[in-house]
Image (tube, rainbow, N blue to C red; front, side, top):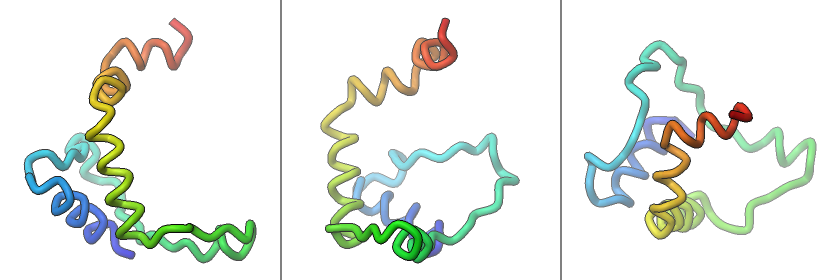
Length: 84
């Protein structure tokens, strides 16, 4: 699956294109396609949800947990991650 399709799908789920977040400070990072065959082959893992269903659930979780999301995006969280 193409990363642009994932990004556009998230924008559609949010029903507000301005809420889809990406890091414009990383413009030169290559966008790789997502391919789950390796995890299936090496670990035997398969998702219980379709990509679309899982995406909907994930986006809804982030919307329902705004306090956590704000904390993770804060400078305080970055300092906690490095042990300060």
